[in-house]
Image (cartoon, rainbow, N blue to C red; front, side, top):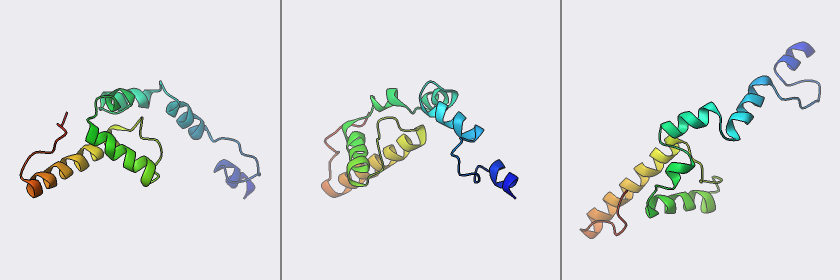
Length: 106
C-alpha cells in the first residue's frame, strides 16, 4: 500500500515533486513550450499590452475585488473571456444610453 501511495505522491511525508509537477512548474516560469503556444493563440504578456482600457478595468476588478490573482499574463482563453465581458458591457451600455461606449474597442 505504501508503494501505491508513494507512486501517487501521497505517502512518505516527504514533499518530493512528481515528474509531471516539475515539468509544469518549469513551463509556467516562462519560455516553455506551452507559453509559446499560448502566445500564438493570442495570450500572454504581449497581448496584455494590446488590451483597451475597458479590458484592463475588467482585469483590475478580477484581481483586486474578486481576488483572482495577477491578471498580467493571462491565457488566450482568459483574454477571450474578458473580451466577451467587455463586448457584453458595451452592448448593454449602447442599449441603455443609445450611444457607443466612450472607450473604443481595440
